[in-house]
Length: 571
Ligand code: FES
Image (cartoon, rainbow, N blue to C red; front, top):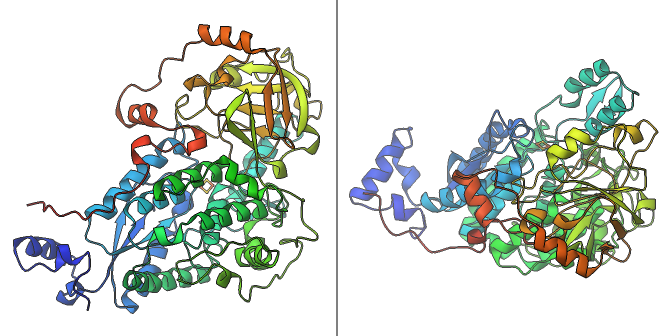
Protein backbone atom coordinates (compact mmCIF):
# COMPACT_ATOMS: atom_id res chain seq x y z
CA UNK A 1 0.00 0.00 0.00
CA UNK A 2 1.17 3.55 -0.78
CA UNK A 3 2.06 5.35 2.42
CA UNK A 4 2.14 8.95 1.24
CA UNK A 5 -1.55 9.35 0.84
CA UNK A 6 -3.37 12.36 2.23
CA UNK A 7 -5.30 10.08 4.59
CA UNK A 8 -2.04 8.93 6.16
CA UNK A 9 -1.74 12.42 7.65
CA UNK A 10 -4.62 11.26 9.88
CA UNK A 11 -4.38 7.47 10.12
CA UNK A 12 -0.72 6.67 9.41
CA UNK A 13 0.79 8.43 12.42
CA UNK A 14 2.20 6.31 15.23
CA UNK A 15 1.63 8.93 17.90
CA UNK A 16 -1.12 10.38 20.08
CA UNK A 17 -2.84 12.03 17.10
CA UNK A 18 -2.82 8.83 15.03
CA UNK A 19 -4.14 6.91 18.04
CA UNK A 20 -7.03 9.34 18.40
CA UNK A 21 -7.94 9.31 14.70
CA UNK A 22 -7.82 5.50 14.43
CA UNK A 23 -9.21 4.50 17.80
CA UNK A 24 -12.46 6.42 17.52
CA UNK A 25 -13.01 5.13 13.97
CA UNK A 26 -12.53 1.59 15.26
CA UNK A 27 -15.64 1.91 17.41
CA UNK A 28 -17.50 1.11 14.17
CA UNK A 29 -15.73 -2.24 13.88
CA UNK A 30 -13.10 -1.37 11.28
CA UNK A 31 -10.05 -3.68 11.54
CA UNK A 32 -6.42 -2.54 11.68
CA UNK A 33 -5.83 -3.13 7.99
CA UNK A 34 -8.46 -0.53 7.06
CA UNK A 35 -5.83 2.04 8.08
CA UNK A 36 -2.86 0.42 6.34
CA UNK A 37 -2.46 3.09 3.71
CA UNK A 38 -5.22 2.04 1.35
CA UNK A 39 -7.18 4.92 -0.25
CA UNK A 40 -9.88 6.27 2.04
CA UNK A 41 -12.87 7.25 -0.03
CA UNK A 42 -15.47 9.68 1.31
CA UNK A 43 -19.03 9.13 0.18
CA UNK A 44 -20.60 12.57 0.43
CA UNK A 45 -24.31 11.90 0.82
CA UNK A 46 -27.21 14.33 0.47
CA UNK A 47 -29.75 11.67 1.47
CA UNK A 48 -32.66 13.12 3.40
CA UNK A 49 -36.33 12.34 3.89
CA UNK A 50 -36.91 16.04 3.32
CA UNK A 51 -35.23 15.76 -0.08
CA UNK A 52 -37.47 13.05 -1.54
CA UNK A 53 -35.59 13.15 -4.85
CA UNK A 54 -32.49 11.90 -3.00
CA UNK A 55 -34.23 9.29 -0.86
CA UNK A 56 -32.58 6.44 -2.77
CA UNK A 57 -29.06 7.58 -2.03
CA UNK A 58 -28.60 5.46 1.09
CA UNK A 59 -28.98 2.36 -1.10
CA UNK A 60 -26.61 3.74 -3.73
CA UNK A 61 -24.04 4.49 -1.02
CA UNK A 62 -24.00 0.77 -0.26
CA UNK A 63 -23.32 0.07 -3.93
CA UNK A 64 -20.42 2.54 -3.92
CA UNK A 65 -19.01 0.89 -0.78
CA UNK A 66 -19.02 -2.54 -2.43
CA UNK A 67 -16.99 -1.15 -5.30
CA UNK A 68 -14.53 0.69 -3.05
CA UNK A 69 -13.88 -2.40 -0.91
CA UNK A 70 -13.51 -4.54 -4.04
CA UNK A 71 -10.87 -2.19 -5.42
CA UNK A 72 -8.90 -2.20 -2.19
CA UNK A 73 -10.13 1.10 -0.74
CA UNK A 74 -11.83 1.98 2.53
CA UNK A 75 -15.20 3.73 2.10
CA UNK A 76 -16.55 6.16 4.69
CA UNK A 77 -19.95 7.76 4.20
CA UNK A 78 -20.70 11.21 5.58
CA UNK A 79 -23.76 13.45 5.42
CA UNK A 80 -23.86 17.00 4.19
CA UNK A 81 -26.70 19.48 4.08
CA UNK A 82 -29.47 18.32 1.79
CA UNK A 83 -31.57 20.69 -0.30
CA UNK A 84 -35.12 19.55 -1.03
CA UNK A 85 -36.21 21.70 -3.94
CA UNK A 86 -39.91 21.18 -3.38
CA UNK A 87 -39.77 21.51 0.39
CA UNK A 88 -37.54 24.45 1.30
CA UNK A 89 -38.60 28.06 1.75
CA UNK A 90 -37.98 30.68 0.54
CA UNK A 91 -36.04 28.70 -2.09
CA UNK A 92 -33.45 25.91 -2.11
CA UNK A 93 -31.22 28.13 -4.24
CA UNK A 94 -30.60 30.35 -1.22
CA UNK A 95 -28.76 27.38 0.29
CA UNK A 96 -26.82 26.02 -2.72
CA UNK A 97 -23.74 27.95 -1.65
CA UNK A 98 -24.17 26.82 1.96
CA UNK A 99 -24.18 23.19 0.79
CA UNK A 100 -21.08 23.96 -1.28
CA UNK A 101 -19.37 25.32 1.85
CA UNK A 102 -20.42 22.25 3.84
CA UNK A 103 -19.06 19.91 1.14
CA UNK A 104 -15.82 21.85 0.74
CA UNK A 105 -15.05 22.05 4.45
CA UNK A 106 -16.09 18.44 5.14
CA UNK A 107 -13.81 17.10 2.41
CA UNK A 108 -10.95 19.30 3.55
CA UNK A 109 -11.27 18.58 7.27
CA UNK A 110 -11.49 14.79 7.05
CA UNK A 111 -8.76 12.31 6.24
CA UNK A 112 -9.98 11.17 2.86
CA UNK A 113 -8.16 10.75 -0.45
CA UNK A 114 -11.06 10.99 -2.86
CA UNK A 115 -14.80 11.49 -2.80
CA UNK A 116 -17.94 10.15 -4.43
CA UNK A 117 -20.67 12.79 -4.60
CA UNK A 118 -24.18 11.41 -4.13
CA UNK A 119 -26.72 14.02 -5.18
CA UNK A 120 -29.63 14.47 -7.48
CA UNK A 121 -32.22 17.08 -6.60
CA UNK A 122 -31.65 20.37 -8.41
CA UNK A 123 -29.25 22.22 -6.13
CA UNK A 124 -27.49 19.22 -4.63
CA UNK A 125 -25.54 18.39 -7.79
CA UNK A 126 -24.08 21.86 -8.39
CA UNK A 127 -23.58 22.52 -4.66
CA UNK A 128 -21.58 19.31 -4.27
CA UNK A 129 -19.54 19.88 -7.43
CA UNK A 130 -18.72 23.46 -6.43
CA UNK A 131 -17.52 22.39 -2.99
CA UNK A 132 -15.50 19.44 -4.32
CA UNK A 133 -13.93 21.60 -7.05
CA UNK A 134 -12.66 24.07 -4.45
CA UNK A 135 -10.74 21.32 -2.61
CA UNK A 136 -9.74 19.51 -5.81
CA UNK A 137 -9.32 15.98 -4.47
CA UNK A 138 -10.28 13.19 -6.91
CA UNK A 139 -14.08 13.28 -7.19
CA UNK A 140 -16.81 11.54 -9.17
CA UNK A 141 -20.60 11.83 -9.22
CA UNK A 142 -23.36 9.27 -8.81
CA UNK A 143 -26.81 10.79 -9.28
CA UNK A 144 -30.12 9.71 -7.77
CA UNK A 145 -31.62 9.00 -11.18
CA UNK A 146 -35.07 9.96 -12.36
CA UNK A 147 -38.38 8.70 -11.00
CA UNK A 148 -40.36 6.28 -13.17
CA UNK A 149 -42.68 8.00 -15.64
CA UNK A 150 -45.63 9.65 -13.94
CA UNK A 151 -49.00 8.08 -14.74
CA UNK A 152 -52.49 9.50 -14.53
CA UNK A 153 -55.59 8.00 -16.11
CA UNK A 154 -53.45 5.83 -18.36
CA UNK A 155 -51.36 8.73 -19.63
CA UNK A 156 -47.76 9.66 -18.93
CA UNK A 157 -47.46 12.82 -16.87
CA UNK A 158 -44.26 14.69 -16.12
CA UNK A 159 -42.93 16.12 -12.86
CA UNK A 160 -43.43 19.85 -12.70
CA UNK A 161 -44.38 20.32 -16.35
CA UNK A 162 -47.83 18.80 -15.84
CA UNK A 163 -48.21 20.56 -12.49
CA UNK A 164 -47.95 23.88 -14.33
CA UNK A 165 -50.29 22.63 -17.10
CA UNK A 166 -52.89 21.21 -14.71
CA UNK A 167 -52.73 24.27 -12.49
CA UNK A 168 -53.46 26.53 -15.47
CA UNK A 169 -56.23 24.15 -16.58
CA UNK A 170 -57.87 24.46 -13.14
CA UNK A 171 -57.64 28.26 -13.36
CA UNK A 172 -59.17 28.14 -16.85
CA UNK A 173 -62.01 25.92 -15.59
CA UNK A 174 -60.87 23.03 -17.82
CA UNK A 175 -59.98 20.65 -14.94
CA UNK A 176 -61.67 20.04 -11.60
CA UNK A 177 -59.82 20.58 -8.35
CA UNK A 178 -60.61 16.96 -7.44
CA UNK A 179 -58.91 15.65 -10.60
CA UNK A 180 -55.98 17.96 -9.95
CA UNK A 181 -55.51 16.56 -6.45
CA UNK A 182 -55.89 12.98 -7.72
CA UNK A 183 -52.93 13.45 -10.06
CA UNK A 184 -50.53 13.98 -7.12
CA UNK A 185 -49.88 10.34 -6.30
CA UNK A 186 -49.49 9.23 -9.90
CA UNK A 187 -46.98 11.92 -10.67
CA UNK A 188 -44.40 10.82 -8.10
CA UNK A 189 -44.59 7.03 -7.94
CA UNK A 190 -41.01 5.94 -7.24
CA UNK A 191 -37.84 7.23 -5.66
CA UNK A 192 -35.80 9.58 -7.79
CA UNK A 193 -35.62 13.06 -9.23
CA UNK A 194 -38.13 14.77 -11.51
CA UNK A 195 -38.49 12.60 -14.59
CA UNK A 196 -38.83 15.52 -16.98
CA UNK A 197 -35.70 17.21 -18.36
CA UNK A 198 -35.87 19.57 -15.40
CA UNK A 199 -32.89 20.95 -13.59
CA UNK A 200 -31.96 17.69 -11.86
CA UNK A 201 -31.83 15.61 -15.04
CA UNK A 202 -30.28 18.52 -16.89
CA UNK A 203 -27.46 18.77 -14.36
CA UNK A 204 -27.00 14.99 -14.35
CA UNK A 205 -26.83 15.05 -18.17
CA UNK A 206 -24.28 17.87 -18.11
CA UNK A 207 -22.21 16.11 -15.44
CA UNK A 208 -22.09 13.12 -17.78
CA UNK A 209 -21.29 15.33 -20.79
CA UNK A 210 -18.47 16.95 -18.78
CA UNK A 211 -17.11 13.52 -17.92
CA UNK A 212 -17.59 13.89 -14.16
CA UNK A 213 -19.64 10.67 -13.87
CA UNK A 214 -19.50 7.30 -15.56
CA UNK A 215 -21.45 7.01 -18.84
CA UNK A 216 -25.24 6.41 -18.53
CA UNK A 217 -25.39 8.03 -15.08
CA UNK A 218 -27.94 10.67 -16.04
CA UNK A 219 -30.88 8.69 -17.37
CA UNK A 220 -30.96 5.29 -15.64
CA UNK A 221 -34.13 5.34 -13.52
CA UNK A 222 -33.51 5.63 -9.78
CA UNK A 223 -35.00 2.20 -9.15
CA UNK A 224 -33.29 0.42 -12.07
CA UNK A 225 -30.88 -2.23 -10.74
CA UNK A 226 -28.33 -1.01 -13.25
CA UNK A 227 -28.00 2.22 -11.24
CA UNK A 228 -26.86 0.18 -8.25
CA UNK A 229 -24.33 -1.52 -10.52
CA UNK A 230 -23.21 1.90 -11.73
CA UNK A 231 -22.68 2.96 -8.11
CA UNK A 232 -20.58 -0.16 -7.58
CA UNK A 233 -18.48 0.58 -10.66
CA UNK A 234 -18.08 4.19 -9.54
CA UNK A 235 -16.74 2.98 -6.19
CA UNK A 236 -14.16 0.90 -8.02
CA UNK A 237 -13.22 3.76 -10.31
CA UNK A 238 -12.66 6.38 -7.58
CA UNK A 239 -10.02 4.14 -5.98
CA UNK A 240 -8.17 4.04 -9.31
CA UNK A 241 -8.60 7.80 -9.71
CA UNK A 242 -6.90 8.38 -6.38
CA UNK A 243 -3.93 6.30 -7.50
CA UNK A 244 -3.85 8.17 -10.81
CA UNK A 245 -4.17 11.57 -9.09
CA UNK A 246 -7.04 12.47 -11.44
CA UNK A 247 -8.69 15.57 -9.99
CA UNK A 248 -11.72 17.76 -10.87
CA UNK A 249 -9.35 20.39 -12.26
CA UNK A 250 -8.14 17.81 -14.80
CA UNK A 251 -11.71 17.17 -15.96
CA UNK A 252 -13.44 20.53 -15.57
CA UNK A 253 -11.63 22.33 -18.38
CA UNK A 254 -13.01 25.01 -20.67
CA UNK A 255 -13.67 22.31 -23.25
CA UNK A 256 -15.69 20.30 -20.71
CA UNK A 257 -17.85 23.35 -20.00
CA UNK A 258 -18.33 23.86 -23.72
CA UNK A 259 -19.46 20.25 -24.04
CA UNK A 260 -21.92 20.89 -21.22
CA UNK A 261 -23.31 23.94 -23.03
CA UNK A 262 -23.66 21.98 -26.29
CA UNK A 263 -25.30 19.06 -24.51
CA UNK A 264 -27.65 21.43 -22.67
CA UNK A 265 -28.92 22.67 -26.02
CA UNK A 266 -29.29 19.16 -27.45
CA UNK A 267 -31.22 17.81 -24.46
CA UNK A 268 -33.41 20.93 -24.07
CA UNK A 269 -31.91 21.50 -20.65
CA UNK A 270 -32.86 23.87 -17.91
CA UNK A 271 -32.06 27.58 -17.83
CA UNK A 272 -30.76 26.91 -14.32
CA UNK A 273 -27.74 25.19 -15.85
CA UNK A 274 -26.44 28.65 -16.71
CA UNK A 275 -26.02 29.89 -13.13
CA UNK A 276 -24.68 26.54 -11.97
CA UNK A 277 -22.09 26.20 -14.75
CA UNK A 278 -20.96 29.81 -14.24
CA UNK A 279 -20.55 29.24 -10.51
CA UNK A 280 -18.70 25.95 -11.01
CA UNK A 281 -16.39 27.54 -13.57
CA UNK A 282 -15.57 30.24 -11.03
CA UNK A 283 -14.49 27.55 -8.56
CA UNK A 284 -12.01 25.95 -10.96
CA UNK A 285 -10.76 29.22 -12.42
CA UNK A 286 -12.22 28.73 -15.88
CA UNK A 287 -13.08 31.93 -17.71
CA UNK A 288 -16.70 31.23 -18.60
CA UNK A 289 -19.26 33.95 -19.23
CA UNK A 290 -22.73 34.31 -20.70
CA UNK A 291 -21.35 34.88 -24.16
CA UNK A 292 -19.87 31.37 -24.11
CA UNK A 293 -23.41 29.97 -23.97
CA UNK A 294 -24.00 31.23 -27.50
CA UNK A 295 -22.03 28.26 -28.88
CA UNK A 296 -25.16 26.25 -28.14
CA UNK A 297 -27.49 28.58 -30.06
CA UNK A 298 -27.40 26.65 -33.32
CA UNK A 299 -27.48 23.18 -31.80
CA UNK A 300 -30.80 21.46 -32.59
CA UNK A 301 -33.04 20.04 -29.89
CA UNK A 302 -32.47 16.29 -30.15
CA UNK A 303 -34.06 14.97 -26.98
CA UNK A 304 -37.84 14.94 -27.15
CA UNK A 305 -38.50 15.23 -23.42
CA UNK A 306 -40.77 17.51 -21.43
CA UNK A 307 -40.83 20.43 -20.99
CA UNK A 308 -39.54 21.05 -24.55
CA UNK A 309 -40.87 17.78 -25.98
CA UNK A 310 -43.28 14.99 -25.12
CA UNK A 311 -41.41 12.07 -23.54
CA UNK A 312 -39.88 11.49 -20.12
CA UNK A 313 -36.49 10.44 -18.72
CA UNK A 314 -37.41 6.75 -18.57
CA UNK A 315 -38.02 6.88 -22.33
CA UNK A 316 -34.74 8.78 -22.80
CA UNK A 317 -32.91 6.03 -20.90
CA UNK A 318 -34.42 3.22 -22.96
CA UNK A 319 -33.66 5.14 -26.17
CA UNK A 320 -29.95 5.21 -25.29
CA UNK A 321 -29.50 8.23 -23.02
CA UNK A 322 -26.71 10.80 -23.00
CA UNK A 323 -24.15 8.59 -24.84
CA UNK A 324 -26.32 8.81 -27.98
CA UNK A 325 -26.47 12.60 -27.68
CA UNK A 326 -22.69 12.78 -27.28
CA UNK A 327 -22.29 10.51 -30.27
CA UNK A 328 -24.37 12.86 -32.42
CA UNK A 329 -22.48 15.92 -31.19
CA UNK A 330 -19.23 14.10 -31.96
CA UNK A 331 -20.33 12.95 -35.41
CA UNK A 332 -21.32 16.50 -36.35
CA UNK A 333 -17.99 17.90 -35.22
CA UNK A 334 -19.19 19.73 -32.12
CA UNK A 335 -17.85 17.65 -29.23
CA UNK A 336 -14.65 19.11 -27.78
CA UNK A 337 -11.75 16.86 -26.76
CA UNK A 338 -11.80 16.69 -22.95
CA UNK A 339 -10.55 14.35 -20.22
CA UNK A 340 -13.09 12.44 -18.16
CA UNK A 341 -13.14 10.56 -14.86
CA UNK A 342 -12.20 7.49 -16.91
CA UNK A 343 -8.97 9.22 -17.82
CA UNK A 344 -9.60 9.06 -21.59
CA UNK A 345 -11.37 11.49 -23.88
CA UNK A 346 -15.12 12.18 -23.65
CA UNK A 347 -15.55 10.65 -27.11
CA UNK A 348 -15.14 7.27 -25.39
CA UNK A 349 -18.58 7.86 -23.82
CA UNK A 350 -20.05 7.92 -27.32
CA UNK A 351 -18.36 4.71 -28.46
CA UNK A 352 -20.85 2.01 -29.33
CA UNK A 353 -23.84 4.12 -28.34
CA UNK A 354 -26.98 3.03 -30.14
CA UNK A 355 -30.29 4.85 -30.49
CA UNK A 356 -33.24 2.55 -29.88
CA UNK A 357 -36.00 5.12 -30.45
CA UNK A 358 -35.41 7.88 -32.96
CA UNK A 359 -38.51 9.77 -31.93
CA UNK A 360 -37.18 10.15 -28.37
CA UNK A 361 -33.63 10.99 -29.45
CA UNK A 362 -33.83 12.66 -32.80
CA UNK A 363 -31.07 13.15 -35.33
CA UNK A 364 -29.52 16.44 -36.43
CA UNK A 365 -31.41 15.93 -39.69
CA UNK A 366 -34.83 15.54 -38.03
CA UNK A 367 -34.63 17.40 -34.71
CA UNK A 368 -37.50 18.34 -32.40
CA UNK A 369 -36.57 21.95 -33.08
CA UNK A 370 -33.68 23.44 -35.04
CA UNK A 371 -31.39 25.81 -33.10
CA UNK A 372 -32.61 25.19 -29.56
CA UNK A 373 -29.82 26.52 -27.35
CA UNK A 374 -30.45 29.17 -24.75
CA UNK A 375 -30.36 32.73 -26.04
CA UNK A 376 -28.54 35.47 -24.17
CA UNK A 377 -30.30 38.83 -24.35
CA UNK A 378 -28.69 42.19 -23.66
CA UNK A 379 -29.75 45.79 -23.81
CA UNK A 380 -30.49 48.73 -21.55
CA UNK A 381 -32.90 46.54 -19.53
CA UNK A 382 -30.23 43.89 -18.90
CA UNK A 383 -26.76 45.42 -19.33
CA UNK A 384 -25.10 42.29 -17.94
CA UNK A 385 -27.45 39.89 -19.68
CA UNK A 386 -30.63 37.87 -19.39
CA UNK A 387 -31.59 34.52 -20.88
CA UNK A 388 -34.52 32.89 -22.64
CA UNK A 389 -35.07 29.26 -23.62
CA UNK A 390 -36.41 29.20 -27.19
CA UNK A 391 -37.19 25.47 -27.11
CA UNK A 392 -39.75 26.09 -24.34
CA UNK A 393 -41.02 29.41 -25.77
CA UNK A 394 -43.66 30.42 -28.34
CA UNK A 395 -41.97 31.28 -31.62
CA UNK A 396 -44.23 34.29 -32.30
CA UNK A 397 -43.22 35.94 -29.02
CA UNK A 398 -39.48 35.66 -29.52
CA UNK A 399 -39.61 38.84 -31.62
CA UNK A 400 -42.03 41.19 -29.91
CA UNK A 401 -42.64 44.73 -28.69
CA UNK A 402 -45.26 45.44 -26.05
CA UNK A 403 -46.35 47.49 -23.09
CA UNK A 404 -45.05 46.52 -19.65
CA UNK A 405 -47.29 45.67 -16.73
CA UNK A 406 -45.12 45.76 -13.61
CA UNK A 407 -45.36 43.81 -10.37
CA UNK A 408 -43.08 45.40 -7.79
CA UNK A 409 -42.76 42.20 -5.73
CA UNK A 410 -43.86 38.58 -5.57
CA UNK A 411 -46.59 39.59 -3.10
CA UNK A 412 -47.84 42.26 -5.52
CA UNK A 413 -47.96 39.66 -8.31
CA UNK A 414 -49.81 37.06 -6.24
CA UNK A 415 -52.33 39.59 -4.95
CA UNK A 416 -53.17 41.05 -8.36
CA UNK A 417 -52.47 38.56 -11.16
CA UNK A 418 -56.04 37.25 -11.15
CA UNK A 419 -57.84 40.59 -10.94
CA UNK A 420 -60.47 40.65 -13.65
CA UNK A 421 -59.79 44.37 -14.24
CA UNK A 422 -56.04 43.87 -14.74
CA UNK A 423 -55.19 46.09 -17.74
CA UNK A 424 -53.37 43.42 -19.78
CA UNK A 425 -53.71 41.85 -23.22
CA UNK A 426 -51.87 38.89 -24.77
CA UNK A 427 -49.36 41.45 -26.09
CA UNK A 428 -48.55 42.83 -22.64
CA UNK A 429 -45.12 42.08 -21.21
CA UNK A 430 -45.38 41.10 -17.54
CA UNK A 431 -42.47 42.37 -15.43
CA UNK A 432 -41.62 41.07 -11.96
CA UNK A 433 -39.06 42.73 -9.68
CA UNK A 434 -37.36 41.81 -6.43
CA UNK A 435 -36.74 38.12 -7.18
CA UNK A 436 -33.00 38.14 -7.86
CA UNK A 437 -30.22 36.75 -5.66
CA UNK A 438 -30.28 39.66 -3.20
CA UNK A 439 -33.90 40.68 -3.58
CA UNK A 440 -35.89 37.58 -2.66
CA UNK A 441 -33.29 36.51 -1.47
CA UNK A 442 -31.98 33.43 -3.29
CA UNK A 443 -33.31 33.94 -6.83
CA UNK A 444 -36.31 31.58 -6.69
CA UNK A 445 -38.09 29.83 -9.55
CA UNK A 446 -40.94 32.29 -9.89
CA UNK A 447 -40.07 33.85 -13.26
CA UNK A 448 -42.77 31.83 -15.04
CA UNK A 449 -45.60 33.91 -13.57
CA UNK A 450 -49.06 32.46 -14.18
CA UNK A 451 -51.00 33.86 -17.12
CA UNK A 452 -53.50 36.43 -15.69
CA UNK A 453 -56.88 34.83 -15.02
CA UNK A 454 -58.76 37.09 -17.43
CA UNK A 455 -56.45 35.92 -20.25
CA UNK A 456 -56.16 32.26 -19.31
CA UNK A 457 -59.95 31.98 -19.48
CA UNK A 458 -59.75 33.42 -23.01
CA UNK A 459 -57.42 30.59 -23.99
CA UNK A 460 -54.15 32.51 -23.77
CA UNK A 461 -51.40 29.98 -23.01
CA UNK A 462 -48.28 32.13 -23.19
CA UNK A 463 -47.10 35.73 -22.96
CA UNK A 464 -43.73 37.38 -22.39
CA UNK A 465 -42.63 37.53 -18.79
CA UNK A 466 -39.47 39.34 -17.66
CA UNK A 467 -37.82 39.13 -14.25
CA UNK A 468 -34.62 38.81 -12.26
CA UNK A 469 -35.83 35.38 -11.05
CA UNK A 470 -35.11 31.88 -12.33
CA UNK A 471 -37.73 29.35 -13.45
CA UNK A 472 -38.06 25.65 -12.83
CA UNK A 473 -36.33 23.50 -15.38
CA UNK A 474 -39.66 21.73 -15.81
CA UNK A 475 -41.44 24.95 -16.78
CA UNK A 476 -42.12 26.41 -20.21
CA UNK A 477 -43.22 29.64 -21.87
CA UNK A 478 -41.62 32.78 -23.28
CA UNK A 479 -39.97 33.68 -20.03
CA UNK A 480 -37.00 36.04 -19.87
CA UNK A 481 -34.96 35.26 -16.79
CA UNK A 482 -31.86 36.16 -14.77
CA UNK A 483 -32.03 39.86 -15.71
CA UNK A 484 -28.76 41.26 -14.47
CA UNK A 485 -28.13 43.39 -12.51
CA UNK A 486 -31.26 42.55 -10.53
CA UNK A 487 -33.71 45.18 -9.33
CA UNK A 488 -32.56 45.06 -5.69
CA UNK A 489 -28.99 45.76 -6.84
CA UNK A 490 -30.19 48.88 -8.66
CA UNK A 491 -30.35 47.34 -12.14
CA UNK A 492 -32.52 49.04 -14.78
CA UNK A 493 -35.25 46.45 -14.08
CA UNK A 494 -35.94 48.45 -10.89
CA UNK A 495 -36.86 51.47 -13.04
CA UNK A 496 -39.47 49.89 -15.33
CA UNK A 497 -42.98 51.31 -14.93
CA UNK A 498 -46.34 50.03 -16.13
CA UNK A 499 -46.98 51.45 -19.58
CA UNK A 500 -43.31 51.55 -20.65
CA UNK A 501 -42.63 49.77 -23.90
CA UNK A 502 -40.17 46.87 -24.07
CA UNK A 503 -38.65 45.30 -27.18
CA UNK A 504 -37.51 41.68 -27.25
CA UNK A 505 -35.56 40.12 -30.09
CA UNK A 506 -34.21 36.65 -29.46
CA UNK A 507 -32.65 36.53 -32.93
CA UNK A 508 -30.71 39.77 -32.29
CA UNK A 509 -30.15 39.06 -28.60
CA UNK A 510 -31.90 42.28 -27.51
CA UNK A 511 -33.86 43.31 -24.45
CA UNK A 512 -34.57 47.03 -24.64
CA UNK A 513 -36.60 49.31 -22.41
CA UNK A 514 -37.85 52.02 -24.77
CA UNK A 515 -37.41 54.88 -22.32
CA UNK A 516 -34.92 57.69 -22.84
CA UNK A 517 -31.62 57.67 -20.99
CA UNK A 518 -32.57 61.01 -19.37
CA UNK A 519 -35.83 59.63 -17.98
CA UNK A 520 -34.04 56.54 -16.68
CA UNK A 521 -31.41 58.72 -14.97
CA UNK A 522 -34.18 60.69 -13.24
CA UNK A 523 -35.91 57.50 -12.13
CA UNK A 524 -32.61 56.07 -10.89
CA UNK A 525 -31.96 59.15 -8.75
CA UNK A 526 -35.34 58.60 -7.04
CA UNK A 527 -34.92 54.80 -6.62
CA UNK A 528 -34.23 53.21 -3.20
CA UNK A 529 -33.65 49.48 -2.53
CA UNK A 530 -36.21 47.56 -0.47
CA UNK A 531 -35.41 46.92 3.19
CA UNK A 532 -33.70 43.50 3.47
CA UNK A 533 -35.92 40.56 4.51
CA UNK A 534 -33.12 38.98 6.55
CA UNK A 535 -30.83 40.79 8.96
CA UNK A 536 -28.93 37.91 10.59
CA UNK A 537 -27.43 34.48 10.03
CA UNK A 538 -26.55 32.77 6.79
CA UNK A 539 -29.18 34.70 4.80
CA UNK A 540 -27.53 37.99 5.76
CA UNK A 541 -24.12 36.61 4.79
CA UNK A 542 -25.65 35.52 1.49
CA UNK A 543 -27.26 38.87 0.71
CA UNK A 544 -24.09 40.75 1.61
CA UNK A 545 -21.85 38.59 -0.56
CA UNK A 546 -23.85 37.00 -3.36
CA UNK A 547 -22.74 37.74 -6.91
CA UNK A 548 -25.21 38.52 -9.66
CA UNK A 549 -26.73 35.86 -11.93
CA UNK A 550 -24.26 36.52 -14.75
CA UNK A 551 -21.50 35.44 -12.34
CA UNK A 552 -23.35 32.32 -11.19
CA UNK A 553 -24.75 33.74 -7.93
CA UNK A 554 -21.86 32.28 -5.92
CA UNK A 555 -20.63 34.08 -2.82
CA UNK A 556 -17.77 36.42 -3.67
CA UNK A 557 -15.40 34.89 -1.09
CA UNK A 558 -16.03 31.31 -2.32
CA UNK A 559 -14.85 31.87 -5.89
CA UNK A 560 -11.68 29.89 -6.62
CA UNK A 561 -10.13 27.07 -4.63
CA UNK A 562 -7.77 26.31 -1.76
CA UNK A 563 -5.86 23.07 -2.14
CA UNK A 564 -3.34 23.62 0.65
CA UNK A 565 -2.94 20.69 3.06
CA UNK A 566 -4.37 21.05 6.55
CA UNK A 567 -1.41 20.52 8.85
CA UNK A 568 -2.62 21.58 12.31
CA UNK A 569 -4.03 18.87 14.58
CA UNK A 570 -7.15 19.09 16.73
CA UNK A 571 -5.54 18.05 19.98
FE1 FES B 1 -35.99 17.39 -6.75
FE2 FES B 1 -37.18 18.02 -9.18
S1 FES B 1 -37.72 18.63 -7.17
S2 FES B 1 -35.42 16.88 -8.73
